[in-house]
Image (cartoon, rainbow, N blue to C red; front, side):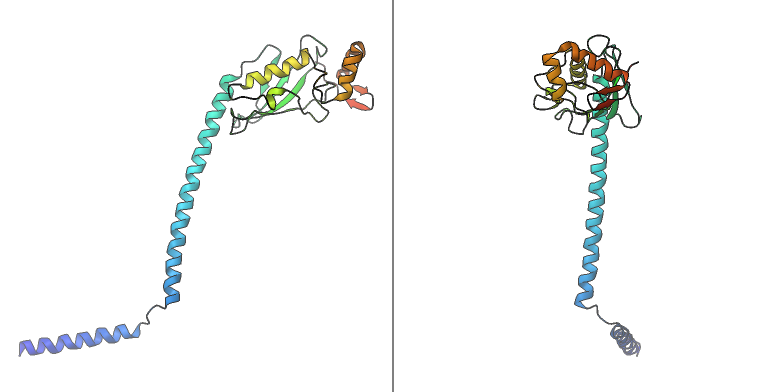
Length: 216
């Protein structure tokens, strides 16, 4: 009797479970694909987030390393000084040159430096922020210096550029000009060139171009 009762109870339980299961609808193929898609999307998102985190870390390490290189290699001559407008960004800074001899003695000239993440494989970007009457610097601040262009090599440093710019103020070169008018005057009449430089640094017109005062 006990066995028979057990079998009947077991059968009732199975019927009840079956009825309960029948009340639930089976997921459709579309629902299964949607669920699978959500799981895949979550996995991809986590993978992208992980990759982005690694990229951020790599970029930070690159910036930090290049910043250390920049600081370690800036050895300034007495006529130069640097300023860092943003102390948290050592890859952008100002160079202030005050020549103590030559045509531009007594002037103060500011250059902006931007060091890219490819440094030292690429030269820094340099602009002259002071409008200057110079054969090798145009009125937009572009600087004609060979090591900033085709002659740059990874063995060169920020110091190489600084000394190159300083040399342009000591020995302007009319053979490779950006300001052709200034180059022509330098080639044909050095006395006139010297007068034009002084006039521009005091503040005034040279020809039709006005220069702000940049003397100490």
